Length: 43
Image (cartoon, rainbow, N blue to C red; front, side, top):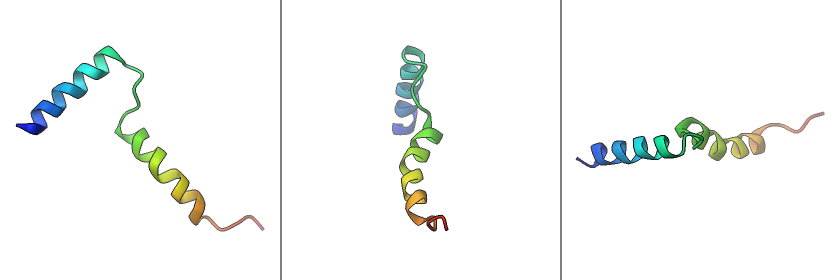
């Protein structure tokens, strides 16, 4: 039941504000700084 409600809310939000970032962009914005920290420094 909760999944259905969350789906409806997301659908309405995307209709009202179509430029909202999707889940992929959200995950990328969280993990990109971590990936930059783990990269070795340029030599």
